[in-house]
Amino acid sequence: MPSLERNDTSTPETQRVTQPSPYPYATHLDVRFGALERFDVQELVDACTDRWYNQTLCRVNESVVRLGVVQGEYHWHQHETEDEFFYVVEGRFLIDLEGRTVELGPRQGCVVPKGVRHRPRAPQRTVILMVETATIVPTGSGAGT
Image (cartoon, rainbow, N blue to C red; front, top):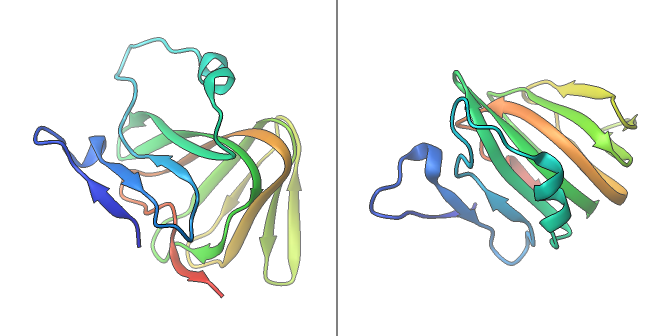
């Protein structure tokens, strides 16, 4: 389970997650941009040096939009109470399910329903957008096995 580091003034929207060593992911749950604030996704992508990077961009009602710059494999997991939407901006993104794999290319998306065990992976550097509830734990439950 990820550990939460909080600043004295943080709220749930500004939490940062630091992953334990089995999960070498850079996951940032702080909301980077506010309403009516223009931002440049490509600028964030260009600055990224992590192999599996996840940054919350903004909040939309009770959901968040997250940017992922990914390469390699995530671990098998599921989200018991939340659906997860993936949209590929560039690259190739695979979502392994028990029994099949969903392959996404640029401008393609897919919803993984709550409770479905899955493993995201990207054979090359891939840029994705995710939409999910603000309360979701990115590493899910049932990690590992």
